[in-house]
Length: 217
Ligand SMILES: C[S@@+](CC[C@H](N)C(=O)[O-])C[C@H]1O[C@@H](n2cnc3c(N)ncnc32)[C@H](O)[C@@H]1O
Image (tube, rainbow, N blue to C red; front, side, top):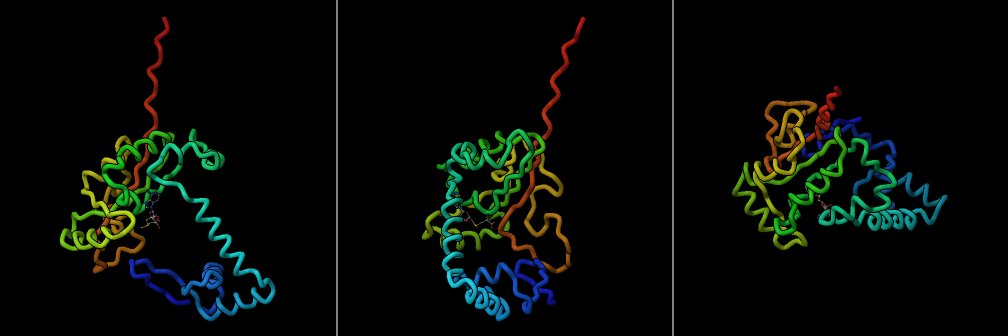
């Protein structure tokens, strides 16, 4: 077993000698993130099930079709029968908007989108959000933004105050809106520099205010 750092400061235990289902699947899909032990297991599988590669690809294509929900249509997401089939919005839920809102232009009303999603969430729900920013390294951020101008969606960097607005009405849990590496790190090793491109936070919808009881006479 070897301790492996993934470049983001996350230390994982990886055993390259034991076939791993995710890496076997990666090999079947034609990926590069696999070791000889995974490839060997996958080839054994292909001997037993020659159509396994085709099955993995059809499964991946299914996944891509099934998750084609556009964040810019929050009502369609909330009203979708498959969403309603698995999520009970009368109960607390957790919603993850990780590194996605910065692909929504201001003209597409990101605050309105998140407000619609937040309002559907019962008290006790959590909103987990991270968002790119130029607050820490404006020079680098300008270059990164320029690169995304050529992409299918531009990168819209927002300030701390703009990102805080996404949590309106929710209470930010400790430690608040911080750089990702500073959000409850497992191992706060000294000298590990924060990447500096994002804010991350978790907000909780507070319990509903108790309705004032009617005074009986
Ligand atoms: C940086 S990746 C983050 C992916 C994932 N949330 C994670 O943290 O691993 C940005 C993701 O935003 C998705 N995305 C961009 N615009 C979107 C939109 N309008 N609706 C839904 N997803 C969108 C992209 O498809 C991509 O998967």
